[in-house]
Image 1 (cartoon, rainbow over the protein chains, first blue to last red):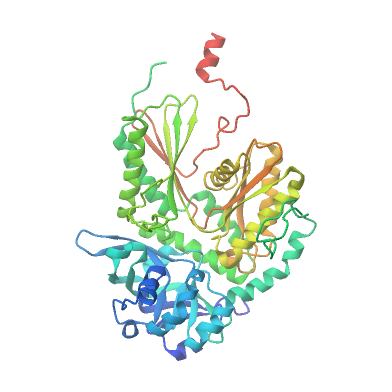
Image 2: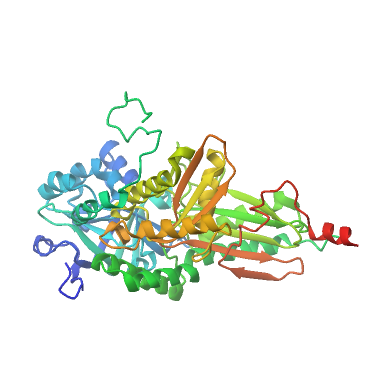
Length: 227
Length: 326
């Protein structure tokens, strides 16, 4: 978190990230990664966890960092890959997959966009000893792209396409990322939201409600919407 | 008046590929200036850190010639035809060339192939498919050029629509605007600080189109020519920045780089409204093709011309006024 001058603390983490290193992280720390990371989002989760396919590589032996991402990449004629920029995709959609994913993959670090709920951290991340790092912006695609040293593999690319394939990336000073959840299941976003929420009544003060309400503004769908 | 020579289709495709790359890689100057100002005044330490990281990101993108953001959004085209302009092969050739340029730039830059079939999720890996990329048209009197603009706007968050009624008034507008910014601003899903576009009036589809164009096709600092609307734009900008939320939804003040409103005459009983957040990459680039072969590149699409915003039945072209006075 920030020091008295508002400067955030910077941390370098090497993969696989050790439990001790994870314990040292504080909400709001700026993190840079070195080592190996892999991308995995809905199509990868579905294949492994729903369709029962084995992961294309022994993830537990590879690394413990799962990145919710699709790179801006193209396949060269010689079969190699050209990766320009990488940014994360919103993670909240993948929360239902994570309890089993932690088990199957041994992941301890999820890198993504926007984080998950504090409830998810407490119920799913804490038992798995995992933390969430959020990308910044969004997104610092060029800075993150610079941090990629090499594409090791793009598993399942022929079936899933460039966006959904499992990319294995060798990275160096890959960041900036911010610590969004810690090992106790606290969320930086929710902490900040609580402060923002305190000021909302003031911002809306004096603005009368519209004459026609919408579902979602009432908890009961049987409600009459005319206000 | 004799027609000028036709604009070459090859030149149009080349220019289209160039603007695809420029939009993806180079942050427009007007937006960059707006973010620099916000970075100077942001008091929230986390929000300020995010703005600083974005400034570094844009420098890295330019230096390395790599995209600013890996999420290409949903790339699309806006074509403005001068009334006297003709392109070799006609409009069907123009569309073919824009689709080809989209596919080739996707591979060459590279940009992320984002476009998939909504149900089967089939991905052609080139950002081209059924109804993709969208191509929208407008026309300009007394001109022999064609402008092609590409916009790569994100596709998931930061946009909403609501039917308001005249009695809801400015309060209704402000509330819905705040609702949208708060809902999508938390955790930074709107990728703010953004240029916020608002569509007011029209029918539902027009309202959405106008708001999106207001966000993506006008520059920071530009004001609607109608004084009342211009004043509301500035008021809403300030309101958005007073929520207490900054970049990534962290405590701060950097939410709205600018607010643009476009209106369309609407049903007498309604006041439909749409809100659209462009993003921290604000990807837009324009090329103007002249019949003599010249191509000029810029970041201001100059989409909303007086002709676009006319409210009269008639519009007199320069040729017509010349004939009348002769």
